[in-house]
Length: 212
Image (cartoon, rainbow, N blue to C red; front, side):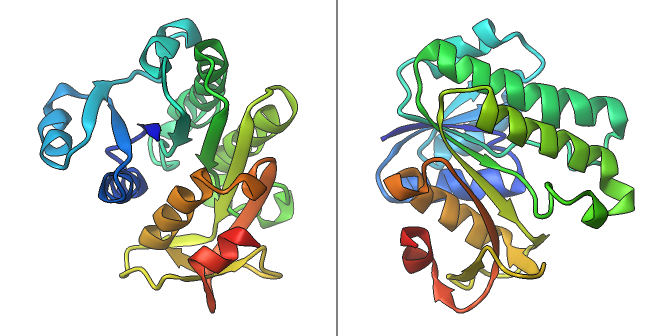
């Protein structure tokens, strides 16, 4: 499978790229800066400079011929309201439009837990959650993409556990490694198309949880 990872240099993006390469996929790592390229070349991926501020038709040039797109980019809510809107909302939407222009159907996005429940949005990250909410809604209602929306809980950098709880009743934490593993397995699991899936660490093996 030819997969383009947007935000490949991010913490989850790097893990997604590594896992895709390890299972033999042809991986294109979307990066912002040229000096990020060498690390991905060494890891067995093809680095491609990709600008989320560019127009969809320009972004589409990089996505031509791909089997799938994974959107793992984000401002992290740390760069101010303007960049949160430009990356997490408008950048995400433009990448969806670009995928459709390029003829790519499969699209997986890393979102965040509780995006549909404003009462649970962290006060310090409200602009980020606004962006995630509307990007997810655009994907669901304004595109014809074969999408999967992953909504992980609080992200931690511990070693992956290989086990999750899907659509939990309450929030929780999940390792970035487990999010990446779930995203990679989601790409080739047709039953996840059209699904919004919340994730925290739990007791169910990821391969089994994906099939559910």
